Length: 420
Image (cartoon, rainbow, N blue to C red; front, side, top):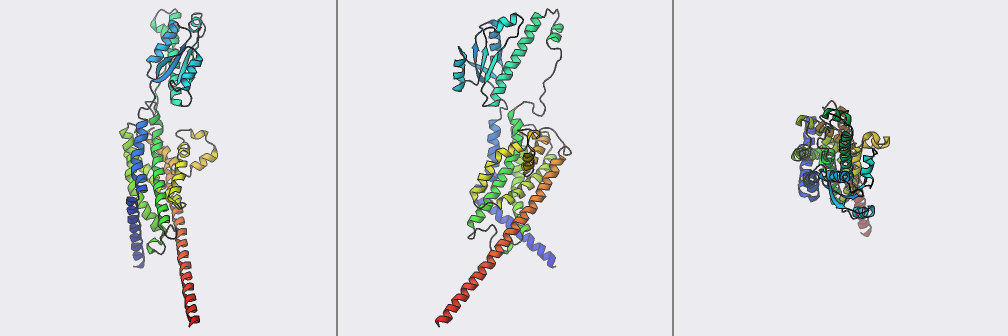
């Protein structure tokens, strides 16, 4: 009966810690912001900003030194494209550079004076493209538009000068090898569908760690002795009960927030969704658990509420790069890839993007799935060990405090006897 009684008491302690942690989440404005408001509003803001996917009507400046029919045709076709808008005409390159420096335009099309004459002499005509490289999306729009227009005009010129008798001969001569441009995994070729899925997974981890860190910082600040574990409270004598009680609270909250981030936001903004809810659930359970236990371990290092915000916000951008989504994993140094193994977001983002955006099965991401469970287990044991250390510190503090009080009481009694 003693074993069952012990289990029953431990379950009572787990439920008490869960209830107390849930009350703290509701009462603490900072935790409410990171657990509820940020996971709901932040993805909406990000997705709304990138909802257009690609940049259209990028303003450019044209410097036409040729003033011929071919140069005007080139300018007209560029202006008719979806990505570029001819906003200014300049007299020379210095004026065009001035327009770029004032950010009135994002690029320059410079057509030399010998543009048409070189083509009529069977020489190669050139158009110089100058782009503002501070934003790669505008550079891509300006350069690719000029490239596609020049290729289209080149085919038409080649067809006119080729002396062919049928349209079939012209097609074979101008484009002997036909191709179809089909972007896989990102049909619109947009920035949002490319990077937002990884950002959603990272938001889940960062907000969870920030909220748990705030909870630990509050516990230290409210404790008269700056202890992470309440001094003398028997319900906090089991490190397993503490970790399980806290994990229950956070898992209940992020079961809802995780569903919103991984299924609600992509559906709302029409991001690619190829994975079934069963597959997403299979991946998200170990990922959320790994993030929870990772957050509990990190929170044990937090002495003040502000510390965790400085730490996690600082590493948010590096963690996005370490996922291998915005920068190829193969181009990272080995030591950086080793650091990436420490964070659940690395494997969570890779598994989520491959399943939801690329249509991978669980077998295709089994490595990430297995590593997430390993991380959940390792960080759980670390969390238990760290809280065990704090429990021992709390007991030692109570023992030393009692000895100090006993020594003071004996000293006062001796002083009274001496006076008598």
